[in-house]
Each structure stands twice: as C-alpha cells, then as structure tokens.
Length: 369
Image (cartoon, rainbow, N blue to C red; front, side, top):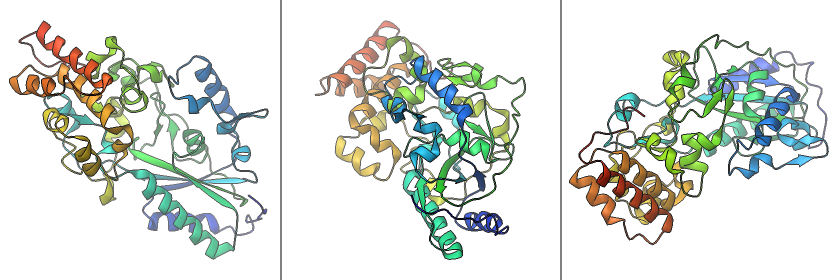
C-alpha cells in the first residue's frame, strides 16, 4: 500500500461513505484507527491456552513486532484508517427453537442456510471502495471479509458498531448479533468513531445456554468445546463425550445468540441471498444423510457449508442421527452408510448405531442438549 491521503479536510466524506454503504445494502458503517493492542493480549492468552484447537492459522502471521491480527498497519502497510461494515443476515426461516426441539430435523446455523456471505460482502465492499475513489481520487485500500488475519470484532467495536458480548460476538442494541462484518483497510486519514460501551451487564444467558459449556468465562470461548468449531473447523473425530451434546446441530450452533436478550430486537435481513435454500432451515436428518457427494456439491454450490466437504457432512449428520429418536427410518439410514469408504464416517455411524442399540426405545436428546 502506497500513498498517504490527507482526507480530514473533507468533513462530509464520512457521512457520504455511510450513505453509499447503506445504498449498497450495509446496515451500518463505522471508522476505526489501527490500534487494537488491547485485543492482542487477549488473543495471545487464548492461543497459549490452546483454545484455538486445530485452527493453526489463528497462531500464524506473527512477526517480531507482534501478531498481525492485532497490527493492521503490519498486515497492510500504510494503513491509517479502517472502514468497518455490518450487514444483517437473520433470515425469515423456520423457528430455530422448534427445529432444535425436533430430533428428526437438522439444525443448521442460520448464517449458512442461504448463499455464502464471503463473495457478497467482498463485492459490496469493493463497490464501496470504488465509489470512494470516484469522490477522492485513487487511494490505496484492501478489502476483507473473514478472509485474512483481521481482528474484526475489535475493529468493529473501536468503530462504534457494537460491543463484544460475553459470547465473544459483536452485539448491537438494535441488531443483536445476527450480522456479518467486513472491513476496508485504507491509507485515508479519517477521524475514528467512538467505541460503544458494554451493555451485557450481569446477564449470563449465553453462558448458560451453550450446550457444551464452551463459553468457559464471560468473553472467553474455548473453541475445542464449541459446536460451531466441532462441526465446521474440526477435521477429525469428534470427541465421544461431546457427541450427545451436539443434538441435531449438523453445521454450526446458534444457541448463545438465541438466548441473548438483545437478539429479541434483531431485524430480518434485507438480502434475498441470505434466504434459506433447498429447505435447509427445516430439512430432516434422514433426507440430508441420503445426499451422495454429487448431490451435496450441486445443492450446496454457493453455500458456505460446501467447504466442509461431503465426508464431514456425513460425519456430522451421523452423530445427529445417533441422537435422534429411534425409528426404522433412522436405523435404515445409518445402516446404509455403515460400510462407507471413509473411516471417519464409519466410526461415527457405528457410534450412532451402538447408541440406538443401547437405549431402545428412547426419546431424542436434541431438545435437552
């Protein structure tokens, strides 16, 4: 990144950027400086405790100056200001609590029932940067959407878009936490916005709601226990002690968000791309378990779910079927994959079948987990 732009002399630019962002579908735009040093100490302690699990990339990008995640100007040399953006994703989907209480259904985190947000947000941020260019001339910038070592929550907090909740997600009094974040690192000199104060108070609803108690303390998440991590990032066998606690959650987990009082006020998304596709907001486990790899790839083209691959998709659903109410349909689905070529799938199918054999008949654990 080259060039140093003195843009403070244009006092209306920030208001224009907010307006252009709204026109592009963003629900809020903020402005941050490059100092997120307060987040680096917490990040280093989290990494030292091993809370990142198999996410080795979280410990990468460390230089003699520190972790680039906490040093925006090291990540993108020349950065002077960061434009942060927020876009609501809460879809008009089947009731999450109802689905979680029905062990025959598959629960998918609501951010993933529609199209992949990465491309959409990157495209909109790029258009915003191009619109700024038409106003101020060429300037150096780089767009990010969960695509590089960026302290998104810390930057969003510093830019006034919300505060870090006890579940570690960004929270806003009007939007809750049902939104995506994106950033534009720039060499523009823009005045920073005022950070939002914490409004969690004494509430610990998110800690109590976590099925695996992954929120080990306020503002501290142990990813190794988190269902979102286990079903998405974790590539190997899911620890047996945690398997019953997954219930029917096959991709991600929204329990901490569903419990958060601030999410009672969260609006629905304006983006049609985030609407549920292929009935993913209320599909049955048996139905999804029957997809072969070709069908998986075709149906989930353009979906964030596709990144985990068919093998882990089957692994996750096998566990959910093991937690489902016993039925001929459920047992038949599991037996159909008992000789699957993947050792990972076979292991989890065998666990599910043994679980049914050991407790027949029984009711679903999904509602209570």
